[in-house]
Each structure stands twice: as structure tokens, then as C-alpha cells.
Amino acid sequence: MTTRTQVLIPIFIAAVIVGAAGLMSLPSEAKLKSVEFPMGTIKVDDVPLQVQIADTEPRRIRGLMFQDQLPYDQGMIFVFEQSGLYSLWMLNMQFSLDMIWFDQDGKVVHIETDVPPCKTALEIASCQSVIPNENAVYILEVTSGFVINNNITKDSVLTIISI
Image 1: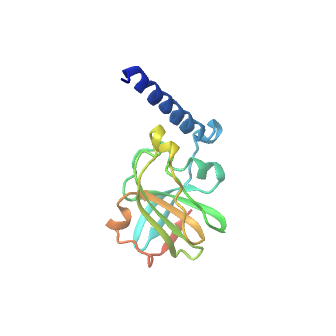
Image 2: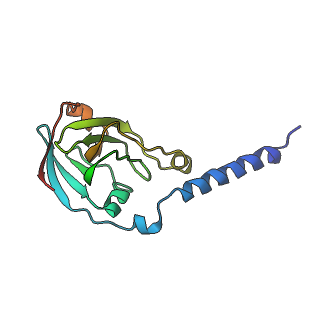
Image 3: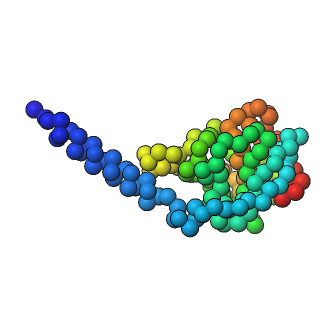
């Protein structure tokens, strides 16, 4: 007959391994330092948004990590120097997101809705990247529900007012 200890020891060891794997996947402390984001204004179709601008590597690495849920009129825009296949993940996010990739002309090339955060050690260990099918120059992250509430589709267009 199996004792309680014989059952709990392997479970404890597995939990330690998963936790250690999760901690190793965290970005280095230098990458998680407080990062200041400049602010800008964009429109998606006719919907204006105040956005935090992630236009440098440290800003893009930090993204919306550890921030509280944003109102529907705010977001973060990732700006890249050249068109490419840029992926995002939900490491240390506190809320679900809608993500919209745009090409250099502001046309939508990919949409992901209601992407869940990776907060716990087990979620972090299995946190997957979201990868678009087409090249983009901009990625917009907004609170989950934005895409549906504002009827954002592949026909939507990004207009940059100030970034």
C-alpha cells in the first residue's frame, strides 16, 4: 500500500521543477527595471486611443508587464524600424489582451483576441508566443474586448496622430 509520503514527495519534486523552470524563463532583472513610456495618440478606424509607445528594445521587452488593466480608450503600441514577423507573449501580464498587427500602411494583417495572461509558475513555464502570419511594423495591445466592442476587422485601418 502506498503511503501518503510516497505520493506527496514526487508531487513536491514536480512542483519545484516547474517553479524553477518558470523562474528561469523570466527576463533578467535589468530588463524588468521600471521603464518610462512616451505617450501618443492613434486611431483605429474612428476610435481614438491614448497609447504608451514601445519603440525601443527595453520598452518592447517590458511592454504592459505588471500594469493594471487599461480602460478601453488606452493601449500600448509597439513600433518597429522595419517590417517583420514580430511575436508577443503574455509573461507577467495582469489581464487578457486583444492584439492587432498592422503593416507600414496601417492595414490590419493579424488579430488575436482575448489572449490570457501568464501569471502563475505553471502558466509561465508553458507561456506561448503569439505569432502573426504576415509582416508588421506596428502592434497594438488593448484590453480584451476592444476588438469586438469596436468592430475591428481585417478591413480596419490604423491612423497615427502623434507617436
